Amino acid sequence: MTSTPAAVVRIVLPAHLKTLAGLSGETQLEVARPVTQRAVIDAIEDTYPVLRGTIRDLATMERRKFVRFFACGEDLSHEPPDAPLPEAVAAGHEPFVVIGAMAGG
Amino acid sequence: MSSVRLLVGTKKGAFVLTSDGARRDWSIEGPYFPGWEMYHLKGSPADPDRIYASQSTGWFGQLVQRSDDGGTSWEPVGNEFPYEGVPGTHQWYDGTPHPWEFARVWHLEPSLDDPDTVYAGVEDAAMFKSTDGGRTWGELAGLRGHGSGPNWQPGAGGMCLHTILLDPSDPSRIFAAISAAGAFRSSDGGESWTPINKGLRSEQLPDEDAEVGHCVHRIAMHPSAPHVLFMQKHWDVMRSDDGGDSWYEVSGDLPSDFGFPIDVHAHEPETIYVVPITSDSHHFPPEGRLRVYRSRTGGNEWEPLTKGLPQQHCYVNVLRDAMSIDRLEPCGVYFGTTGGQVYASANEGDTWESVARDLPAVYSVEVQTLP
Image (cartoon, rainbow over all chains, first blue to last red; front, side):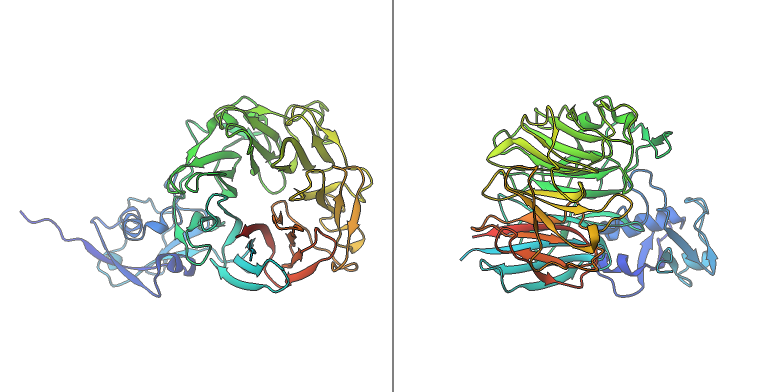
């Protein structure tokens, strides 16, 4: 019996989180299937422990209120965390984008 | 030769300013953590190279950074501050119950004798303690749970625990202050707490003898006289001679008794400093003149210290953790402003110079006196 290989998901983080994680651009992470918001954030936090608590609240494990998730031209922020992400994200064709709410007027 | 290191937290990063003991020439390193709100940085009295820093934004939450080399390099440590048990509610601004929610760390107070032990004062108000260099934090839940917690309410800046004083003569005695709940004291290392607000008067409270609800802005003590506490309250400069059991007003001849910081001279326990601010609706100095006031009599009689400070068109504020005093002789006094200036006096406040002029709004200033 063979297990389903993990997906390789492209991830774009906002500038502050890239700095914390020591990244300069887009990153790719192996994500357990099914590929969901929760699975992607789990992978981010496992790979970059410094980001624990910066995307989702440590107490509630809910998305922080000034953070949004975009992919494939859609705002997926209010999708259930265990809902499958678009196949284009799971296939690595489109990135999963973590956005900080606009600031600066 | 001795030297001093200023740890400056600002709205958009941290800065480290250093000078030799003459305190005339300064170098500025930073910004560290650019773009992040740095509410507070403080070094360990037991190991000055160990520094803790509170890093946060409204977007991405709270981190705690630790340096083991005097601020040159930093390592993120634990950022999980779990309230013990069911957090319950406190009062919201309109008096309705509001769930306790962690927002940020306002103040970090390293232990006097163990670099790995550090206390954190947080919003919504609670105190946490780490004994492993900041990697894990546990709540000292007796403070929030001592009984009056459901009646605490936030000040305009949030319901923050902003002051932690450790009694050098008694390791089990800790003082804390919360806006807008008041002052509290523990005699058992933080396990249990007692409100210590007798004598405080706050116009916004219907009960003038209210046990809690007072907007204490900061408390200070001199290590040689830990039973004497000085308080800058929202309005009123107050003093206690009995470890907080009772307070009396020492505002005296100040031009305004509203303000945020208060601190004590390094070598004279009865010499104290405040920065009067016009009012709670005008968060700038009276008459646009930035003046530190010094009392050499433990309050009531105050003298303005103005040499080197702007005496016209100055409309900055000085926040509660943005004043600090070094241990040299004569002692140096430092403060930062919301306009991004850091002022230093190498002569107990007699004269001042601007050692940084255009930083982001300064949230905190802590000085380390180094060998």
